[in-house]
Amino acid sequence: MSDDERIAGARRALGERLAQLRSAAGFSQPQLAPFIGYSRSTIATVETGRRTAALDFWQRCDDVLATGGVLTRQYAELTALLEQQRRMIAVTAQAERQARVLERWRQAKEAGAAALSFDDELEPAVAALARCFHSVSV
Image (cartoon, rainbow, N blue to C red; front, top):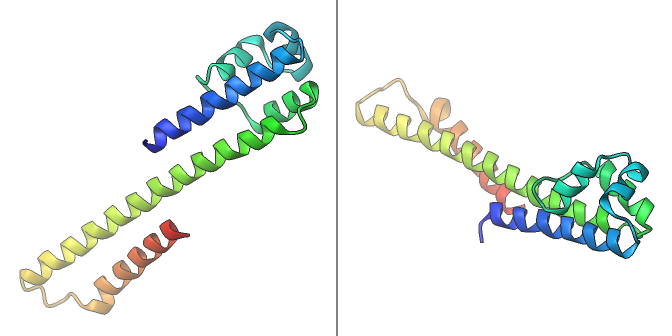
């Protein structure tokens, strides 16, 4: 399963959980809206997983529905997945940039560019790659 699929699934599960808790508390979407300060349409799009809402939304729902923080905790899990995906995208982009630097250095070296040295070109690239791989494993 891809990261995008896991995130979409987590978003849908969170929305479904809200719908279950809202119904169990005896609220319709229009009835809940004024209590949490968000529109019925926002509640509807969140419940279907088409979008997510800010932490404030989930805290207000937890308070009004007296869930004990269930929604806020599930939202934290979703945001952790999103952050993990952002980190992986950044690490991948950095690794690709460093690979291009290394390839240019290799090509220049093969062409006989005497001006390139390990200290000036390769060492910073290797250090940056090491940081990328370290951040992935942390």
